[in-house]
Image 1 (cartoon, rainbow, N blue to C red):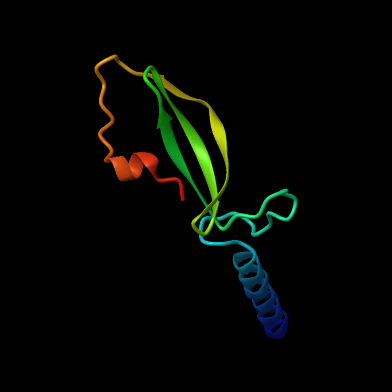
Image 2: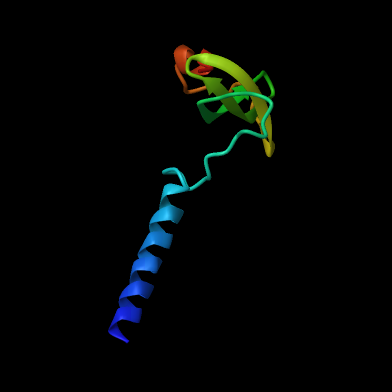
Length: 95
């Protein structure tokens, strides 16, 4: 009986380790092979015009821009005298 318990514990530990190795730090499985584009990092950014700001997911391959996708429902209307608090570098930065 003790031998069976040890085997069960060992198998459980191995399964947990394999599961942890299958996920990256953010919890998503490494697999963007179905995508038609290659990217190494992504982040969100608000892109604003005179009347509104829209959040986008920005995809980059290192410092090279790959593409951007609007986030559905992530739009706000801004006031006429509103000023973006981000500095010029952050407003214009893509990757």
